[in-house]
Amino acid sequence: MNQLAVRASNASSEAGFLQESIRAAYNLSGAVEEDHVHLAQLEDYTYNTTVLIERILNSANDNITRTSAYLTTERNNLRTLSVAVTNGDLYSKSLANRPFSNVAAFGGAPLVAVDSEDSMNASPLVQSAPLSGPRALVKIKFDRPDVNYEQALYIAVSEALQRYPDARFALVAVHPTEGNAAKVAIESTRARRNAERVLRSLTQIGLPADRVDLSYSKNPEARFNEVHLYVR
Image (cartoon, rainbow, N blue to C red; front, side, top):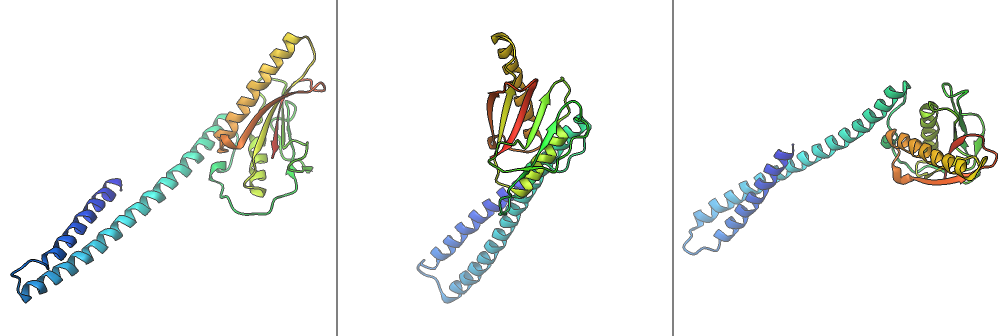
């Protein structure tokens, strides 16, 4: 299709040059009336050919645009499917392919808590929280290495985007403060790595990284490293 578009563009340029040459031929001296009749016929034929070429060029460009958009959408879906296969979960389409329409802002977001006790069956709870409130959209407790949070994370973010398509997200790495300074520093580093891991999961399911803000915090009440996701 790209080659066809290039050839059509070249043909359009050549047809435009021919039209200019035909119009210039009218001013040549020594021509008879029959010559002008033939020039007029040739000009009409060239104009009709130019219209046809432009139609082919527009059609080729439209097909290229549609094909590119389709391939981009399916690549995002395949990326999400790859994450789902790796994690053994069933996701829907990529979040990057969600249509962005003008809808009213919703007053709350589903709260999802993910920890080792319920990591396999995490689902949105009934409670809701305001967009700018202190309650997190998702809380992931990293009390073991293999916390399965991707399914719950996808469900929560998908629901949030359905209700508020233009939402931004804040990803906060929370670490406990118990122990000496060295232990606190180690836990802080682990919390940041967990937050980066969650950020990679968000981008893999189709959420643009520029819509997620990273920050870090300490919580004296926390027993384990946690990652909180807020809707802004």
